[in-house]
Length: 254
Image (cartoon, rainbow, N blue to C red; front, side, top):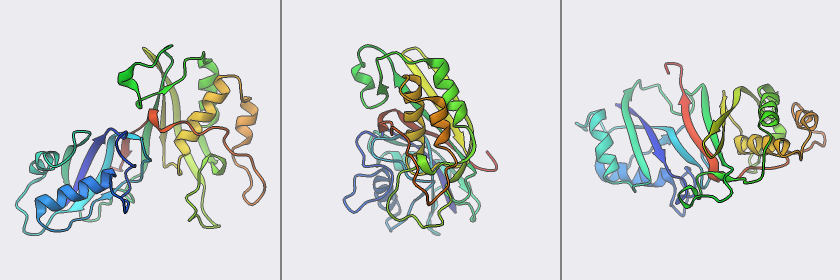
């Protein structure tokens, strides 16, 4: 049986999602828990990477249960959670068709980015929100988010791991980018068909620059759809990981 997991985690203690030789990633802990329960090596596949310090309330992964396993989807949730750190939790497990893939079957993702504008950052929010106590223009912030919505070449809003191909497609569609008021600040909600490496953090950082009066909206717009292969500007700021949450991975049946 192929099992689909919905996973939540506090990203502060971990070096991101993706398994690394040094360990201490969310995927590493899940792989270890699976192997301990199944008594054999199992591989978990995630919907995509999250960086060091980035959080998730709706990360999705899948694995293939051993043929001789008698565990149903409901049993896997408590079994895994007893083997995981308290800052990683499997929230749901369900059986899916054999051709389901947590990454390649996805048709979109939702992220949100939290900003705390209180004069002093509450200690229980450390690492969970970007602290910006200076005033922001909320109207300009929403206008900046509107500018960044739609289908564009987001080349200027991508960081690079060094393995990109010359013909890499940087076109993505941001279906919506909406500002939400919070009691202590703001939340930027992003829904798109997919996001490039660090793209959400660069969108958030650039929108904040505009809301602080440090980036003109027409200069922000000029960063979109630049011809590849020619000198181009980059997004002026990559927001810190603290405030970013992977909220949901969207699939055709969602």
